[in-house]
Length: 506
Ligand SMILES: NC(=O)N[C@H]1NC(=O)NC1=O
Ligand SMILES: [Zn+2]
Ligand SMILES: [Zn+2]
Image 1 (tube, rainbow, N blue to C red):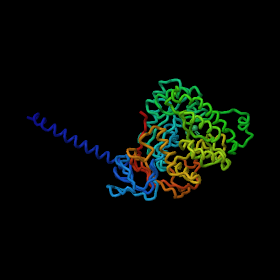
Image 2: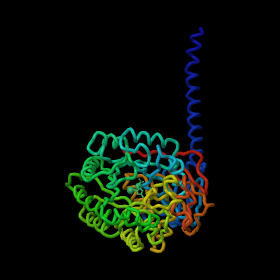
Image 3: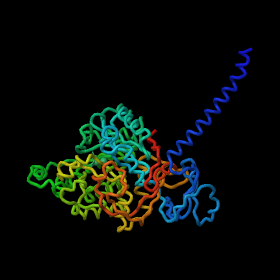
């Protein structure tokens, strides 16, 4: 009798359990959405007079549903009344695709005290960056194998406020070991990165042309890029003299002379002999070589232009600090400005802008490379000993805009350099443009609002004092940032939970 009753009750109990489970899942996903976003809606519209789309700037509305862009309506099409549900009206503010920074060092795990995923991605979100691709060095251990990539992915878990992809390292140790390299690529790095000069990090040694050739031939199979820090040390006599103590190490010009443009030129000359193999029918067809942080806008740039016109698969980025600053302005002892390759003179800066505007430079990236204030040696001011790297992540949009205005740059160009081209380069088909079906990765910003980066300004970087931009006046204030539809940042406030996701190549 009892067992008959049990058999009757059991299905009912199972039904009850599945109901409870269903409601639990529903509620927990609701709860997590609430924590991931400062906007309590999964479906809503964003309206503005200036929405930057690949077809131009429009006045209208973007419909967001389930983290994606569901529709885009132009005001002039007169379908304004079709908008049902929650509407966020941004008025005259610019609605642009979120920035994709393909070159940042967040130093996690292992050197999280330099930056780390939480502060780095909070700064990114506050700066309108919705995706970044983290470099394989400055974290410890360097990301040069499947195992070390796993450490990075684990370190990122629930600690990132924007989406993050990862570059793997190409180093002498793995360059001739295809199973390590393929293990790294199969584990999801978006491409590889190598140095042609000492990287400043002991467990990330430099590569030579034969390592790079090997790397390219493997990358060809995966159709992913190789990013190269293109400087080769030229041991001229004057270079040795500069380090012997007879020149003032606090003077920026001393540092500048230790890394002349000929270093970049020599590296790029070697690289463009290798990129010939990326042409149709070549041994590395399918691979792409990408030169990071170009500073020299003379011979180095000419070599890149020539390679491009011969059909080599080669791209190049430059960074806001090369566009914003020139050597003449850098004060003695102000090591915040030390980076490699160095910031060169005003004439070089002007030519760099020209190259960007004429389309010879493909994209922009931050090369955010912070460290501890004591390693930046701000008290000492020794340019030859201080850490080389500019800290900029939160400011790249207003910096590009502020310094580019005098060259008449447009909102469409900003979106091209900071979103559309970086997305394509990093293989992110659903990112980089406000287009139907794409991720709703969006920045809202006000080009005409000016602000001063003083001590009262909310900076989310771990060490604001080492940033070369502190103390400058900028225009273009970021007011809100959406990552896959989640409002992750709004007016000085971040979403409570870190809901960025690691991006792994398949
Ligand atoms: N290791 C590292 O981040 N190096 C970067 N810093 C810099 O100024 N240039 C670089 O390549
Ligand atoms: Zn570099
Ligand atoms: Zn870098």
